[in-house]
Image: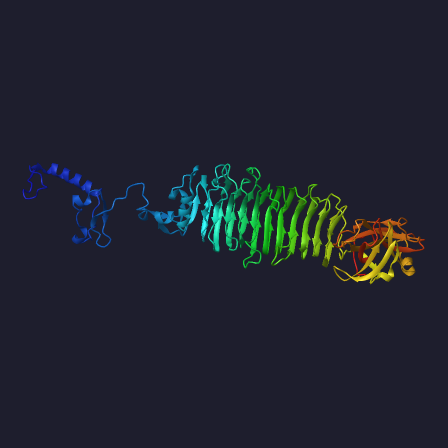
Length: 617
């Protein structure tokens, strides 16, 4: 049987074929249709449509109209997707609940300095690229590399973060003298600034460089976060600004680099343009930082004129200067810090801010710290009218040769202080006023607590009290006068003469009977310091069974130095003989010239071998 084609259908074969061959062709066509796209039977003819003409579909892709479903030519996206057309490429983060966005939006969540032409070879000037990236208003990423910059403009709401790579970090080289890597040059308040995970140093031969520099310190750098920065010793100052609500976290300074010849280095300088200005440096925090090799005479940290600085968990090591100089700061809290190998006479200096608004440091607290002093250290904390000092849980592996705390106007508590070695002459001294002073839970080997009103436990002050010049017998002293203390309360002024000056109080017989066989401590406090004051020491003495003289005392103790105008104290301890016939407490002063004076503020007896506990004269 033959198959005759339809001559009016151009798709039909032109020659007759057998039914068998036609069936074979039909099966082949059916197979091809099964592997091709087709419209479902439910579609209407108007929704099916035809392929676009060749001219329309050339260089395009096939897509289906969003309304009719009819085939049409769509745009062609080359691969890789470029930034112009990345809005059409989808992105979905891993994780349940993630929503789809496009690649362009995702990539524009932050910018890279290399998007704006930064080279990062340590030679080309990349400053403009950094400024352009910051101006984009997004978080700025700094890939690993070395970028030569000078005075990148600090602006509001800026966030610059380097790549945290151990062996290949993001490094900024300050390329010009007296420039900052970042510079706050606007004469305005700038805030919300974050700079993180960068290494910042000076280019070879550059002097006066800073990591952060502020030109006008009558204004603020506010709400700044410096996080994970490594600043080198070849910078003159790491952070030079007038800061408020600023945090330094996980930063390290001075571990690497060498300062150019003759240049000093320190970490933080926050001092005002003028004292008396409206703005002050307030509410700043330093946490988990490490500071090494500062050499600036005014300290590794030099701050003044403001309120509340908190320094926590920070190490100060290998310094050739003070660790901290604070002047006129109302409220400093130092906790969990480490002080080691600090080659300076003082480790912490609390001073008074200059005129027109001079004020000392008020409310100074230090606790849970460790100090390993050097032979050059005279004092741990020196306070020029530092008020309300609280020190607790401080471990001194070695202590300063002279005083651990000195010149504090109000010492409130010394708690849990542990001194393991060293023989300082005093623990606190030259203290104007003690308010609710407490010393407890302390281990103080070879150390004397030297404060005028320290409260000791397990000791009994038994008098005398309210002493005046009439209660003292003198030898070698031309006059004794009751006067108003230049420090606090009343005092007895002794005018000295000759080489052997003695003043003593005789213990009443009934009190002597009570004290026989018991150990007592005689404590005295006083000062000198006028134009005629002696340079000799004043010794506290106890006499028994003799008429007191310059050399026949039974016990003598720590002397206080009479040429200093600040309040000092001393003590002597004696176990009274069971057969003692008399008992006297007092002071002796060595060689002096006529007319020189000392003032005795307190003289008392404490039962036991105790640290001083004072009552008034």
